[in-house]
Amino acid sequence: MIDVHCHLTEEPLLSNLGEVIMEAKKSSVEAIITSGIGPADCEKVLSIVDGVYIYGSLGIEPYALEGYEKVIELIMRNRERVVAVGEVGLDYYWGKKETREMQAKVFREFIELAKSLDLPLVIHSRSAGKYALNILIEEKAERVVMHAFDGSAGEAERGAAKGYFFSVPPSVVRSEQKQKMVRRLGLENLLLESDAPVLGPERGVVNKPSNIAISAKAIASLKNIPLDKVVEKTTENAKNIFRI
Image 1 (spheres, one colour):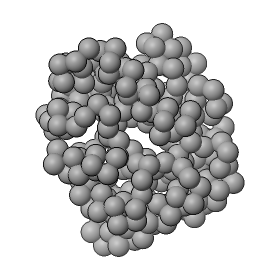
Image 2 (cartoon, rainbow, N blue to C red):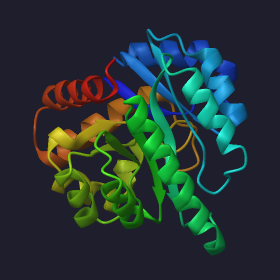
Image 3 (tube, one colour):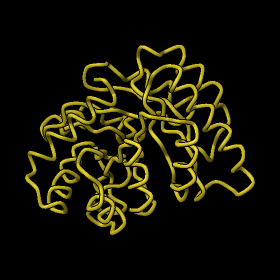
């Protein structure tokens, strides 16, 4: 299995990285993509990626855009070392209303950057799924991963029709919204993510990449298909979009 989205540079994961990786390997996780959020965090991501087991994606939280130009520079300078642009996008949950125009402007810049470098996008769209999809479709983005999508199943289907992927965190076991989305989307549009250290199976408990096994089991159960089919297809999807 491949964990397409997490934050290994956040505590308590970073200070226990060896243990976290060992646990992931024992749980049949064959690769991890860790995402940077902001200039300093992106530098940390670059310091831990090895291009063999840990891969990097560089981006910024949409509600804290200070220094986003530095992130763009880092992506351009490290084009050969990153597998995606992200997470980037829109956040109408934490982001104040007056920042929405700026969020959209920066989002479009990152979409153009990803297209120019032929890299996929990893999208943060908290409480803004419909609006993020509108911009992605307007900008003709093609290689897209909607991470921990919290919008309606209907909106997810709209993205899936464009060939977008939706990565499923272990919190699917306690989220009716995510369960509904998994039932509605085809396996060809699904990926596994942990979003560690958050979005674990238990609220408030530190999540780890090894828990994508929980996501896979939940998908198999919700779709009433064999677990090995879920593992095989989501892994194939991840390898294809991230070219790893």
